[in-house]
Amino acid sequence: MAVAASACEQEPEVNLLRGINLAGAEFGHEKPGFSAAARGQFGKDWTYNGESTIAYFARHGIRLIRLPFRWERIQPELGCDLDAAELKRLRRFVDLARSYECRVILDVHNYGRYALPVAGGSSREFIIDERSGDRAPVSREHFADLWSRLAQEFRDDAALHGYGLMNEPHDMGGSDWKAISQQAVEAIRRQDARTAIYVAGLEWSKSYRWTVANGPEAWIRDPAGNIVYEAHCYFDEDGSGRYQISFEEEARRDPRILDRAVDRLEDFAQWCRRNQVRGFLGEYGVPRDEPRWHELFSRFLVRLDELGMESTCWAAGEWWGDYPLSVQPGHAFVSDSPLLIRLKRRTR
Image (cartoon, rainbow, N blue to C red; front, side, top):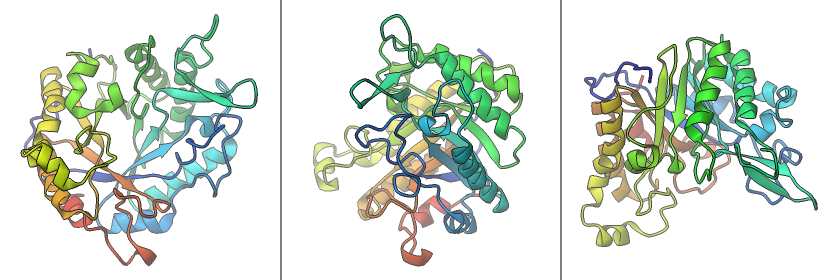
């Protein structure tokens, strides 16, 4: 295991990067029949957020952006060239971010899977390295190829903050995520010797189940020593981020509910400390219209500062509508989310 400088016990700094997920380019994948051959229609099923949104968050000092997008759209033929139209959209977004002095983490938002068409006109999500007959329709070599091509495209871009290998791999069956992610890291390093690589954990990357899901030791070997392990953290009962029951009911079931702000982070933080690696909170969020969750949100941010961890809140995006966790500003960008003032404290 390559040892990187620890960010788990650093003294808090006033310029810690707190950022935001700008969702939209991953939208539409849940529609029936979605696959690499039926990706939907740009502008109807998915979008890239525009200059106004980037400018808004930059103006509030939030300059780190985690950008979710789908593998099937950026590379609709496995092992082949990136899609020219989608690459142009992705590059335009990164160019806009650079113009506002923002930094971008490219996030392949696929949960360890890739959707392919199957007989009968339907589709199926294949887990990376999952066997179907005598072959794996989606292999670790395919995944490494994707990242080799993306790194070749973006390695010299001043706005690139890091490569987010895969959002929330889970239920991987017999597939070995540690070997899959290691091969992707090696593919990136053949193209880009320096940029940070963000490696998510198994079991939806839940911070409070990190050691159980991923074992006691860090697994990536990186000659650059620039690996960041990515966890996610939500505060509802099951940690899903759906917040399906009221705060009152949550508090009735758990009188120590506010302690979740620290408790759910500690397993991941201690794992980082033991392994002397950097940690990153790629997703966290609470309902914007329930102030009692906001205190927990603030406590969580304080603890992140104490640990010296970068983070990106889930989520902003122009298509969210009434999504409870949205921190997108209101109509005409004149109405701020009530969570924004808490999020923007001590940002760069």
